[in-house]
Amino acid sequence: MQAEAGGRLFARGRTGAGGAVRLRKRKSVLYSSAGAGGGARGADLIGENIYLVLFTITLRVFNCALVQTSFVPDEYWQSLEVAHHMVFNYGHLTWEWEKGLRGYSYPLLFAGMYKILQLLAKDEVQLLIWVPRLVQALLSALADVKLYSFVKYTENAETAKCVYFCQLCSWFTWYCCTRTLTNTMETVLTIFALFYYPLEGSKTGSSCKYLTLVALAFIIRPTAVIPWIPLVFWHFWQEQKKGDLVLYNFVPVGVVTLGTSLLIDRVFYGEWVFVQLNFLKFNVIQNLGAIYGSHPWHWYFTQGFPVILGAHLPFFIHGCLQAPSKHQIFLVATVWTVLVYSTLSHKEFRFIYPVLPFCMVFCGYSLKQMKTWKKSAMAFLVLSNLLPALYTGLIHQRGPLDVMIHVQQLCYNSSNQPWDSVFVMMPCHSTPFYSHVHCPLKMRFLQCPPDLTGHEKYLDEADVFYSNPLRWLKEEFYNDTLLPNHLIFFSVLEQEISSFLILNEYEKTAAVFHTHVPEGRIGSHIHVYKRKMK
Image (cartoon, rainbow, N blue to C red; front, side):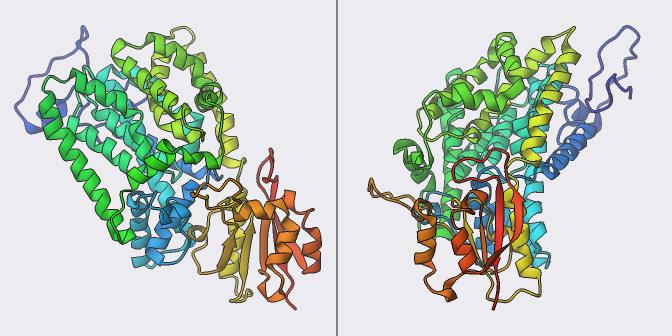
């Protein structure tokens, strides 16, 4: 086989060039399967060139190794901590699980991994940390390949290469795609569903498959349905046999997936709980997510969306003008999603992560249109995304993971006593918990459950603590026997509670770097103090 210029990563179908040799067709299953679906279909691995697949997997595994920081608490507390509690029967579940706002379908994936490790007697803490992340990296790599395949089958290989390149260059994708976040899995399923979406000219369209994947994303995170609302409506509008679409696709897929979710949650909750409805009611209808902070309505347009796109932004704008009209539905889905999320008070970068693959399609179109400046543009994308990817992945907010290494040592260091205890005096859920320790060490952190009864003056434990840390500590630990052996807190608190530390004979054993931009209750370092035992 001829190797095309630029390497063997991308398979190119042969064209009828002047000197090409035409082979006689043979009626063979091997030949017919290889030629089905447009040349590259039925290739070496998952329908694509094996070198492309293996390269993408290798890159995402490397990506996983170079993300050593913490992003948001949900990447542990809504996945790994729940899975650890499911399998090992100890740990802590946040208030959302008491109120039935979260489903067990996503944690069940990691619980399965933990159970296998347990049965193999390999449930070591490092494996509990890294195996889920490596699996997430693998799924993200397969999604990258599917995004390439989608564009190749709907357009051409050249455009697909440009979209693939833009996807791999995205700093925010690099930052998020190996994390155990529901938003990450939502994005992965969105790309898989996109591959099967019956877009005009698509060779891979399948109503049943794409609707099933959208339904799975909805089960994992109910707001995943938001970007798909215009896409599903567009499909319905274009479909000639609307009745068949509803009767043989919408209804069966909805019944089976929701029914499965209900059964899973029935098993682990011990009662019937419709978590998707509870989640939408809390976060969208009642808009109670504002208790975690609020932003102005324009935040996604002025900060959120430009930040996650980064250097891709001018390419996205240019691509919106260059892309064929059939892809404008993806622009509609993107704008619609940003508008819907803008109506909610609580806003985060990760909420609009699932529309990033749509944006990469337009960025790829922009890159393909460039002739003279194409190589320069590619170099610009790589270099401009490299710095934020490495900084956010290796430096910014790495403290919570590094400090857990010190906690792990309490479990496996024979010099420590069975009555060792740890108190994390940080904004609640700042660190992972038992999933990153994996031993029944006595641990405690400041609680912050919201008040759902409407009391205007309600303060959670963390708020009360930070209003006067020294007084809170004196009242909470009025007896020496109640004092924890180890204290963990941000550096901004050290000066304020220094008298308590001296009085109770605590000494600093570690100072872990966290961030260059401390703010409010968040310090630049995390300090670990140990009490001298008499």
